[in-house]
Image (cartoon, rainbow, N blue to C red; front, side, top):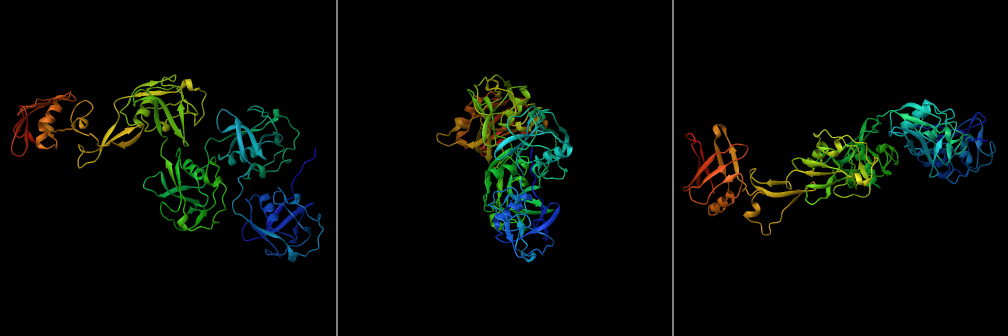
Length: 561
């Protein structure tokens, strides 16, 4: 069976690896290319063959110095879509009318191609499986002829792992179907991408799917180029800065969108993105603008894996610095319950709401959910879709919380979207207590704007018809501060106008924690946590004197109204 291997190329005489005089090896002999009709299309094919994203410009008139020996190619005419330079039209090997003063060259974009896409299929965990490669938009397998640890290392590194544990052969992870794209792969182990290794050519093989190759990768994933967020008011937002060659710099916002922001946030350990930020929202950076025209698909493991113009290649100013706002945890909500504190648990990941499977779902998991939503704890965990079956994605399965976690996504679970459940196994909770409340903006803890939390989100209460009955706590007790001091001294303090004291006492009489009547000199008993001090109220010129019954001398206080 015929095999195709591209004629080797190299760049010579440039000040950096991405530029130089183009030299081609034919019959084991290196020679040059004449610049007759040499243009950006020809340069693009050269740069792509060498692993760059494309060409910045074509070079003529021996800009990078004159070569010597044979001039192998002349009148090269590429369309720009060819995979290799020798696939382009040209006069023929060694046929030319040129001198070395016409040697052609290129300047390539500095960033290297991401390589043809790879995936692992059929493994029990994400770091192992049958190797599949996508070529011309079609997924296919790799034959295990000569497949070894060097090949496996390249695959694992391309997928973001630190390296390979072992190479797998004989369809260990199951037989694929469709095209076998690669055979006789022979990597040195230093290549960045699998398609940079020597192999027979796309679709050229002598194999069956019983020979599909696989890998087992080291479980830890590469961190990629370091990132940080700068200038935000909280740690989950800010200007995106990337470190390259030991130097921190910014990212230009040209074409910056939610896909790019998703990659940044995921690389930094967040569950997703709230929005992408442009126009230096978080302040202008200084120094180098490292990245421009970033174009992530959203599935990359680190920002450096996305397509972009090349390190330091940009047409931006710092007024265009890009930023992100990341989700600091996956939002939760309860759906389908008859009260706000009960329902099917739903979690939002990458902007999409989905359910949680009830495999191993217990009170510890429910407690974390309820606490994240602002409740004091959980009454019980619910299984078997008690609150109705959800739809769309089942995001979490085999959740195993200790009960001390602040957020559900900090608990152990299989991984986002990895499950063996149907929606009939949707998990739910019943949380303790009423809807959470808080007081905000007051001069002391017992006064302030009333805010209520629903489905994990705090909001305010409108004052239409707002009166003393609304200000009463759910159990009937007015907001009143009891400060238990040494020797059981306690002082009741409240800041209502004098004319409303009787009304306050009426409200207090309805409380299970307080007992009172409306007569002058009423006796108030405060009973909570097993402590029941009594107070005798006497009106005076400055307010009400609250004296604890049988109190020692001096153990009294003023209830100012």
